[in-house]
Image (cartoon, rainbow, N blue to C red; front, side, top):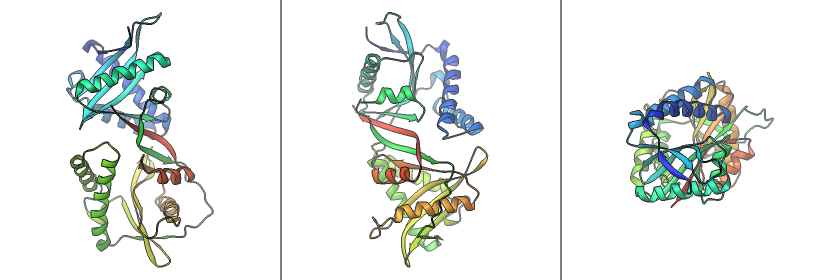
Length: 316
């Protein structure tokens, strides 16, 4: 009998939850996306948000992965699933025994059959850099990169002065920036395949309001226009964060203006971002980039950013 997915018995939920919490913390810390107590707090908040009613949470489905067709039949792991907006999310995939390629094939078949039964048409999975079993499961099975989190740590000591100048964004410029940035981010969410147009507009507005409640004067935000040879060539939005109790900066938006692209300004703005991060005492910079933006990914990797978490998507 091929690999089967069997609902987790309620009597086993507490043990599963403890093991899953430990795994989520370990993956976050191992990838260095989050460190120390930050990883613990993030994992706890994540579990509380997605499992508000524990085992009985209607939006989650926790399954054991059983294989009775081997010489040593039994469970080989668990998979935690959640559905939203036409996508079935693999929230966590944990193997207790390393599967072989045949078992991975059968698990994939079982998941795609479940997707069909649930009436959704896409399967999504996020993986941390250190999750070797997860990456092996996705390899060669038609998943496409939807988005990723990247990290530059430590900030390199570059002996190069950026050829662009950052200036604090004016209230007048902020008004046009905010409208454009919110609309562009919604478009990117749709292009990534993870959101419908309506859901993307809602999510983009939510994030803009959360980050910039007081506009250009919002606390913990650094909004710049970038200038070269007397012209505005782009914008840069940095959020001040903490990471392992130390200052950290996150790139919330970077844009090179039309008419000024393919001249190296994107790289120069990112170099200027490093200087801005140092000025607030940060030793690391994080960012999010969509998978379709191959040029930006290549730029960031050339500057030393590494992938710490990736989200993949597959149509079924």
